[in-house]
Length: 569
Image 1 (cartoon, rainbow, N blue to C red):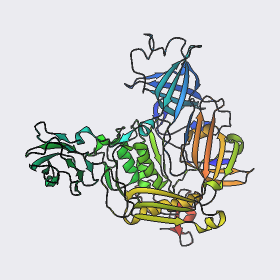
Image 2: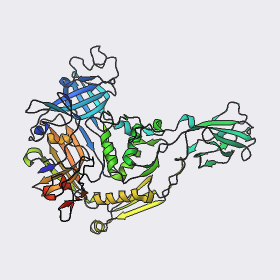
Image 3: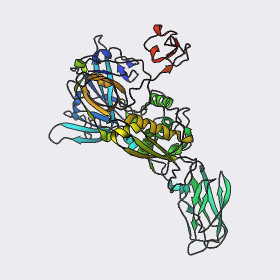
Image 4: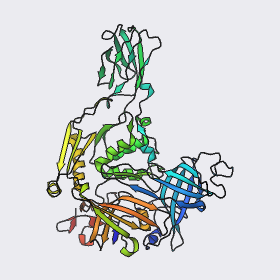
């Protein structure tokens, strides 16, 4: 069998001379048979950035598995255990000689890399996983410790967005005569601003009589609120109710509170929105968002030196999702995990932690790739099996979405005023109706996002998907979730079977090195796409193309040659 894939060249490899922008001789190791036994490097990175090589203490562990679910795609966090020898008290935190003595080691990093020594004598390292120390267990019988590590995705899964602040709770003036209350303030997205509000009694009395002026430090006077009657104003985005107590309100009685602009986006790309939620900054400009302190605060560096997020992957994803132009917001106390999953669902994407411990992203869109890697059957693949199940078919899908750009106050149910239904009649005739229903509170003119989603979903799941599982060697090191590969196998009759990696398990303790992969062959992955070429250099790294097909390189032939294939347009 043969697997084709795209190598992941980039500055995440480290050689003896420092950062390396190319793999160099690592390709030699990747072409070897299943007897490759790379050298391990285990490093501890303290909270202040100090790197300590602890490889000599390594005993066992360090295996990590990442998996992508079927839509709706679920964010998965990775964990791994690392057992280390502790014979010289290197990790005994109460011993002065310990590297953990008198310092915080929880949330410091463990980085695991594999190294290959090439025929030229150069050693290159490829990072397998990076995790944050979550727990230390000292063994009772042996001089060993086990470090339990979790990847950065836990910072997403464990967090809430747009937490309701104490400043948003109305506070009664200490000199008030009336002993009534003011309810929780509810806000309207795309209307509420960041400002201070004062509610002042101008007409004394009980409920239905007393009147309060409503004045914002930015909005100014926006009307009046009657005690005992709900105040609801869509222009300033506020909803509340003042209620009288046993003692009626008197002139001058007051409440104060603050409102804050919601995390919200107008006609934005979904990859850019996810970046904003992770960092609190704009992907395109780097500017701090008005509501940055209401979302996560991961590293916002906009280049490859970013330690927590793969910036280049987000830029690529944004360039591949230009057909989306979403308008929407974050609700109060919303799960970061659920919010991001709702966006991934629309483009069937995946978000995961790469070998450098950074959050990366992939889209399910046609990819243009001029580089194909091949591996011989006898050299790289073993233990191949596959399953094919009708249970995973989707041939009828219905999604509720916001058809009109109208919004609800917090605390109110979202109004889905649009429905889009798609079906694959051929699949239904073969397998029966197998339906799924979804909702999205994002708005896009004409409901295009709902149409894009249902079309992609049916294209992938209208036939029983083929799930291929196999074990490979060092070549699997260059693979990540969402990578497209081709599989050829004589036994099962696969001929360049198009598939997407849905599960990746890297076991660094195995000797020789074994990497387990599951790849889903969903309908649509084998579609051929044509790209219109250009005779001039457009600065995109792919142009110009040869004028004649007969003179075209392999990469040129990815583009469209018209007029019987003789000229490029």
